[in-house]
Length: 433
Image (cartoon, rainbow, N blue to C red; front, top):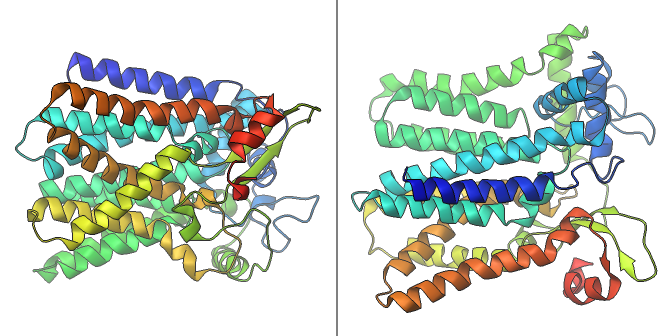
């Protein structure tokens, strides 16, 4: 890494840290799904390993909260923080902030690796570095990523382990060292233990490897790495449940109950939305409402950066056109197509479910679309010969998403703004209200 690269990356990370840490302890009470996650994490921090896994009672009955509906790994991180820092908002939200910063770091090195070994192979390291910096900058500006970094839910943990697992898989593809396939299975197992969304990515990678097998002697290791290892590690994350007196039979009953609860959830929600609407950032989720004054409002909305979401939608269309064309080298095409498949499987399976869905379920897909956006933008910049026009274009492409981030930052973090301003900007689109 060059000094320039280190400086720019440090600035991106410092910007991300400040925007996430600022007033992290506000609101001082639990809000949105913290009402489910935090009480269970507090029980775990107190050594109560029974109620958070008690599938015989409702996960939430209006008073008692067990939250057995989700895998437990994220709650272990939250419980550890609460154990050492106390039962306060900073303690239960700090793990999300830490993992969001780790996500940015992993994303940077993942993009850098993709640039050197897949997208710009043989074209020098500068393009790979620029790709990594550009993608990391965009990810730091995403509204969903910001909001989920500041709340005690499980989505950030899923995102970190998912990106790390996919990164390890791409290292395996380029180096053909099977320890990286095993590492990918371990990391994706931790993603699965954070949220079940990771299952689709595990199945994709296993299917891809299985179909490319030329020697079935490698099949046992493939099954071991991407089937047995994730299943075993997922099982191990429930060890506190067994310490609390539950049996293996209880474990399987709990998994069945989770499946049936998700598939049979008839509830409706005012802010639910379908997966296809997420592509256009059409329906946010209202997380929190502060004390409203006559002329001002205080809210937290889970909403993407509006301009960045427009960039990403254009990148989606360009990717489809790119993959339909046959004019590109196979190594680049294979890399783009795999990233695109991972992107699709990170959110499209939600289509088959009838339970309430929300735009933050789109979070695991966003970094993969940012990868595609960054590649096509950088490739476009490199074709511009006029240096003045190139600098002007780069400035505008980078400045305006940052400008929108600054404008919408109060809307994501419960800063007080004039009501007229909120109505004119934050609720410009009727569905954003």
